[in-house]
Length: 224
Image 1 (cartoon, rainbow, N blue to C red):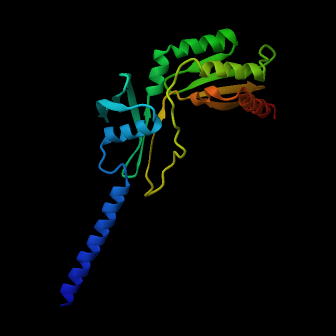
Image 2 (image 1 turned 45 degrees about the vertical axis):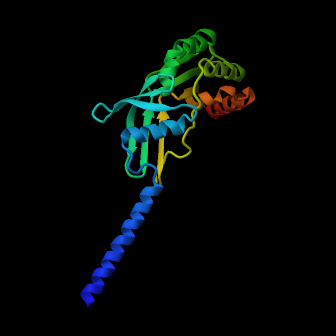
Image 3 (image 1 turned 180 degrees about the vertical axis):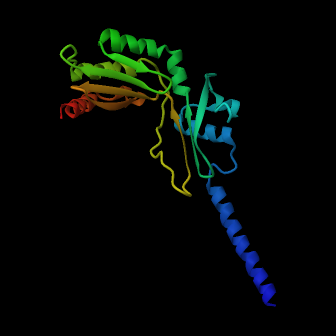
């Protein structure tokens, strides 16, 4: 009799734990999704005004996959930052591909270097304006702000929602993508002391006075 009762208790406990597991799966949007589906979830969350599909499935050996928006723009998704039960993150080249199509980098270089006399630096992952303030380069806050506004408005870029939280906690679902070249760094150096302020393409309509405040803080930081 004791064995029968013990067996029933064991069955009940297994059922309860199994039920809890099923509930967690139902509450987890990542559950049952393959890598391509997870990437699409991230893209649709980050670029809400666009729709995407997989063209070439993510290849873990090559560390990339090819995806496409509703207008036929193909781009790569690379680097799985996280990929487990509750957490998924990757990097996409959607914005970078659009910038290249609109000749953004050559136009930005013309504005930054030819018009304002500063240095423009970029590669596959970093894009920055470098300002070395000295006797030969006393560019004002107002001119720096105007330069940034002009650069951010060169190309028509998609609306992007940056993840509020890029950290992961056990049992808490989080998934996102980060755009390659999604940030314009403004590096200001004076007397060999340098500080950086970050600007996003979503800042293209930011009031110039707010940009001035950010640049003024940069100057204050390098003057300390």
